[in-house]
Image 1 (cartoon, rainbow, N blue to C red):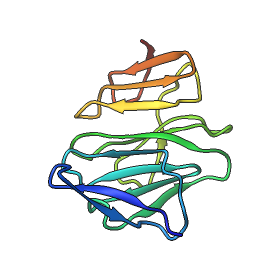
Image 2: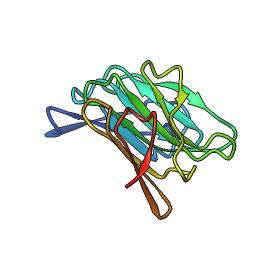
Image 3: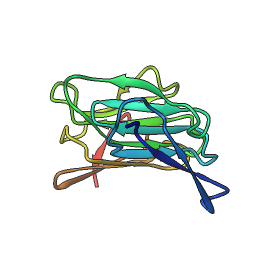
Length: 145
């Protein structure tokens, strides 16, 4: 059975079912640009990206080492963020094209369970077990909140 993702149409007044991937997925997190066109989702070891409001999806980053916990997208969709819980590469990563992911500055705790972005992608907040971190420079550096 294909995985099912429901996307809003008309500012959430109606919803349209999407079947974005052939394999079933447990969608753990999804984030949207303000327009709703650029979407980033996580499902275990994979990140999925849609540039057309969920009509089609691409696996953009998959790992056998661990999982992607949560994702965030700036309002204009130019900045994408993903929090990883991989044992060898835990932390926050960023991308502008959904294809190339680079690590952000280090947080005190490597396993990030939640992340949120400001409209311009410059201010971020992330949390791990018992700690909250803030970045004011697009994730280049982090401070305890």
